[in-house]
Length: 220
Image (cartoon, rainbow, N blue to C red; front, side):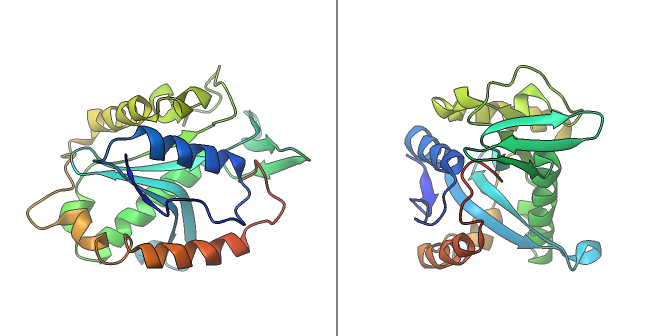
């Protein structure tokens, strides 16, 4: 069973999509995986003054780290206008491009690793994926989409193979080692005493859940 931070979603987070994904990750990934929910970051260097958040960050000591963005509801994309929308239980929401958001989060967290002096972790394999747990993905509507980094409802039953396929996709062109478990400690040294602290995660998720849209169900 994967190591989860937090183990359960805070009560005020009303995204059924994120809840289903968290349960799938918790129950189906093996103990080598760590899953961090609702990871916030701020920009550094040329990106200073910006911020962002990813739904799940999944580090693995041999594979690398995978940023996962979740989009629930009936998600669709207007290809000509490059606009994404999600149909929730009560209304249609415009949503940010999930692939662009996942990419921003990946680079924001990589910048944090470099800024923290954890070059080994920054040089490990990092990738991103987007998960549509309420959809069956029949077509790749955006050039940023690829089947290996696009999860649909089938990944709820078997998230492990989907995550492994995403790691394999990013490994093909990266030229980077997958391992985060380096002699210098890499990612684990950077997060062991801070981001993986259960007390920090409980308090952080309480703060962020209060700031989320109180009536959101399947929207971003």
